Each structure stands twice: as structure tokens, then as C-alpha cells.
Length: 538
Image (cartoon, rainbow, N blue to C red; front, side):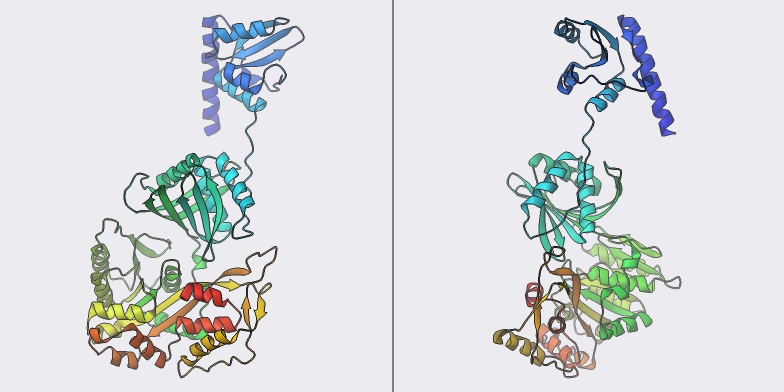
């Protein structure tokens, strides 16, 4: 249908051009019917043809016929006649489309080659020059699609666009570490920023931080198609609007409990909650620690035809069939939106509710009330550890044994880079490091068998051409705090008399492994490095 319409438009254009030639007293050539176009590259340069709006249609030893358009000036025709005095010069009117078709043959568009980005070092000038060169050639929408596509291939979690003085830097966060991939000129960075802002429905001139979301399918210049699914965060900085785009993979198969890397004890705790879905479950950690992925994997497992699931999120990050997902905009500063929405959806009789994030006292109390009335409430919470999260919850809810009993699980986590088994290098820790490891071992719960450091080998990253960094993917280091008799007894104290240290000590006595304990076992098992643990846990 589109092809027929285009053909009809061209026919009308040729008819109009023929009519115009008759009025002006020129010959007319229908270039759309010329199957084999002969090129005469030695007569005029491409630059001259663009400038003069004239092309040689037919040329012999003694004659040249130039194709001209209605915008070709009389001075141009005089100039061409005087330039080729040894030949008889004539002119024939052609359509604007005909002129463009000829120029595509004389000056074919440069083929864009989208080279795959290969991260081979923490700072690679050749890579940056190559990617920057590609970004300088392509249109703005393709810049965004190309970067997104490459970030997906490299399994990056984020794309950062940061405006420096005189240029913009593009970096990918891969396995928790940022890698520079491009430098953009101010003009190019403005184009990319405008394309991102338009797609995410944010303003390039806003004075405040903004949030947006991009979901679109882009056809690149090489005809490949790219799915773009990004959460966009922007903030005005001194040199321009800085942007962080979080990548999402919409495949629900990636969100299963089997892919979370839970050990047997951790999986047992989660399975018990899934078998008896009630109470409050909180995933705790900073941005980028995998909290939402953990909760969605639980949610996906619980998502059956026999239960009603509703989520409240700012913004909705992943979309799943069978789940009612409600976006909440808290950019206005009204944090009570979450609590108000939560109260409203509880009237819809859900079995399971996910609250994107507990940000205020009202949402915390409403979540606990919902968990007391037979609902399973899943929520994320920003805190450094499970004990810190429980301390803050106690401050919010006060000395209330009913609320305390509603808390089923507080799971804190961090992500560290996993060592590549093919390149990792073993070493014997020095006495100072052994003493630090022994102190962690001595603090293990009484029911845990303590490992020996005799002849222990730790590992550091190696390097190879295939894997220059020595890491492959990430692993989660977790701690799971469940409500024990010891914790319940401790929480009878007034909130002012409690501290996170007291709560953590009691939880450890009840059998909880902290993130540091779990990191210790990952080190001994050769899964990560001491430096990674220090980088992530401090």
C-alpha cells in the first residue's frame, strides 16, 4: 500500500514537472522511466552538481545535455554553456526527485557500520575514538538505539551521559564498575540529550531532577531492529543535563527464584514464605543492589491464576502478565501518594501487594497493617543492613508486638563481581588479612560450623584476551533476618533503648549470617576477591 502511494506521488510530480517545462519552454526528461542511468563523473564534481543543481544526463564528444530543476538559475545555465564551449550544451528539466535519485548514484550515502563495542581495559582510547566516530555519523534516535543495543550485549546495567567542560562522556556500568565508551562533541551531546528527553518525556530545560521511561523499537540505518527499554533519571549539572539510563530486560523468564543464586538455607526461607504468603517481606540495600529483581522473582513465582497481585511502583520497572501494576508519581514531593494508593488498592481485595519502596512512616504503617490482615506485602527499603532496616521500622511503628510479628523477612543484599574461574590466581593471605578473616569467623552464629584458615587459599583476578578484567557477572551477598524469639524479646524494649548493633547481635545469636559472613564463604570458595568485598561492603 505504501509503495503504491509513493509511486502515485512520483507520477504526479513528473506530470507537474512536464507541465512546468512546457510553460518555460524547456525540454523535459522523465528520469523515473530511465532504467539504466549512465554516470559522467569527469564532467562535474559532486560538489558542483549539488551547488549548481545540474547533472549531465547524456554526454558525447560534441554534445552534453544537463538535467536541471525548477530551482536551477539562469546564471548557472549560462555558466555551463561558457564552461563547455567545445560542445553543444542543451538543458532538460527533471523533477526534484529525479535529481535526488541521480545524486544518490553519483554520491552514494556512506554505509554506517555499527561495530560491536569491546571493553578491553578500564581506559581504552582506541575504543572511545571508534565509538565516538560512529556516534558522530548517525542520527540522534540511532545514537540512543546503538548505545542501548551495545549496553545490552555487554550486559551493562546502566548508561551514563555526563556533561563535562567542552564535551560529554558516555560510560557503561558493567558488573558494578563504570567504563568510558565515548566522548561526544557539544553539538552531538545536545542531539543525544534531546533524543533521550523526547523519548522519555522529560524537559531539557528543567531546573529539577526528573524521571522518565523509554519503551520503543528502533529500526537502525542498517535495517537491524533494537528494543529500547530504559528507566531515565536526569539532573541539571553545571555543564548540562546529566543522564543515567537503567536497562531492563522484559523477559519474565529471567525473574525466577532459580536464577537468584540463593543457597539452600536462603531458598528454604523464601520457599516457606511462598507456601504461606502473608506478612511483610522487605528487600534492603542501596540502588543497584538487585532489590527489585529479588522481589520480582518472588512475585513471578507467586503469580498464578488463583491469586490477585497488585504493585505500586515509582516507576513501573518490569511489566508482567497477570499482575496489576500501578505507577505512582512522587516527583511532586508528595510522598503520601504511596500510602494513599496502598489504602485504595487494599479495597480491591488483593492477595499479594508489592510496594515499590517504603519511603515514609505512613506507607510503612499501612504496609504493616495490610500484612496483619492476611496479605503478603513485598517492599524495598533503603538501609545499610537488615538490622538497620528493623531499627528504623521500630522507630516508625513504636513498641507494638503485633506489628513486629507481621515482619516475616528482611533480606539485605549487595552485588559483587564474580571471578572468572579460567583466569583467577590463587595466593596465600598474609598474617594481617588472616587475622581479619579469623575475626569474622569468630563472630559466626553458634550453630554454624567454623571454617579453618589452615592452608587457606584466596584468589585475585587474572586476565586473558577474552576476559581482560578477570570477572564474569555478579553474585549477590545476602543476609536474611527472620523474626526469632530472641528478637521478639529484644523488641519489647522501648525504641529509644534499641540500636542496630544490639539487633544484629541478637539476630546472629539466633542463627543469622550477615552479609560479611556470607562474603567470607564466597572468598574461601574462590568466587570473589577481598578487594571486591571491601569495595561493596566497606
